[in-house]
Length: 391
Image: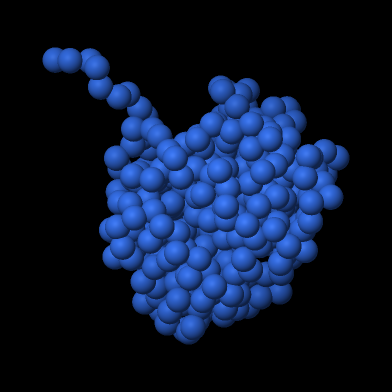
């Protein structure tokens, strides 16, 4: 037998309960994970939402004592994590229930990993085998309840957090960070406003497209990413138009999960640029991805043309790179996504810093076309100006 074949490691182990109403089994699922005193973690915007009160009532009725931590901002910072760690330890919690979008889920996962560690979170940045520095036995179990269909953080082994001192978003990784159980209930997304539905959905689209274009052997991820793209094309406009459309919400939830599990293959320069822009300007991650996508597509064109043609055929929008690019541009416009970064209030005044931080981002290593800081600056400047003529 020939050994001249690709070698890789693939992981898709998360148990996911999907369907309208499955949130009502929260207490049962917490008990199944051995949680007797979980800490519910969410973001500040959801703290007073009825679903949080409902979660606490369900747990209390089952004899499960819980507490709430919601000091989490839109682009989570280190101070949020430190505050959450203190609450977790003070309450002697034995698990984390993460409820929310990407921000809440990421901080929740980080609290579960870091609360009982003796090392700083930066020691677990997604670099080489740094994750082995953590004491795996000190990591608490996580049950994730996503309330947006975008980041896929509910099935991810990493989390993004901003270092306020350096204005850098860092990707923190540990295999045991992945939630052990996910409750994917589309009813929890019914009230999500159209603009957030669009922005988070475009985040999922970017995950699926970027990971499909990564030059690595992972046909499982490729197949999942392609189907995720198909679902987004069919159902994101419906979810934006009618938030009560449970079929559209369910399919978008599935697409977000698919983006999350597939991008273990890697991402690319869209995320490399979006991360520092989020840290430096506080812009919404999914929306920033949506704006950046066509500019990175144009830069990567020499290396992704064949894959783009396959995506175009899969989506039924043509058979060429140009066909796919035009569809992306039209799709963004229909969803209300600005054409340029200037539409998000971003200018060129800090272009050099953005380029350096983007080049250093872990996502850069997987981008299908090699980049330099000068390349990142060129892409960034084009995205600010709305100029798709990128060599």
